Image (tube, rainbow, N blue to C red):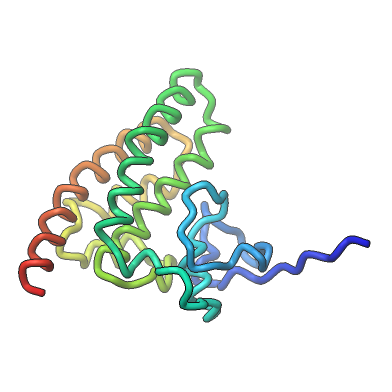
Length: 181
């Protein structure tokens, strides 16, 4: 006898193109606080927080921003960039798109998690992120471009640039926060 897997609706505030269509669902058993960079769904820790499915057994990623920043930046440099370079060198935009979305979602998450908070809403993310003190120049236009064409090589180049620029600013922000705290 097989058990039926139940799905849960992705909150409307996370259902924006290119991440999720309206009325998208995910398997409920994926909701957990643990950040897992291998899962192919976007914003899972934040969606978990939205549904109040936190158990207190696993530390949410926004509780340890320096650690999660290191994990994501290592993944980006060692896996993301090389795999995306291969995709674009082979002109394989179909394979590049989910990887671009994965790392773009990580970038958006880090912009929130660095300040110790989950992502609450991505509907106006380019504008919202421009308000952060560590946002790179022209982040609104750059993110809007990536969101509208994540499978283009120029979007990849832009994502490399904003990760690089922001990572330096995150390091300064976290150091200042540590010195204050």
